[in-house]
Length: 64
Image (cartoon, rainbow, N blue to C red; front, side, top):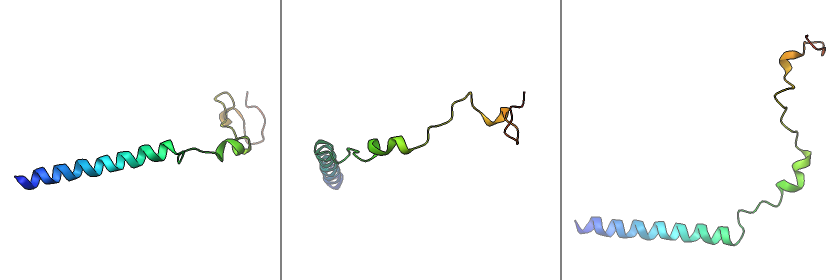
């Protein structure tokens, strides 16, 4: 039974260390994304629901 108490203690200790490491990394800016905002204008936008290819035939003309 004492082994369970020791294992629970160490598991809580390890979980606390991981939590402290995560909070430290967030506080020091490890998860800040400085690259994506500068190149966001280079990415294609998603097509809107009104401009679907179902209303355009193979020749590029409107089907209606």
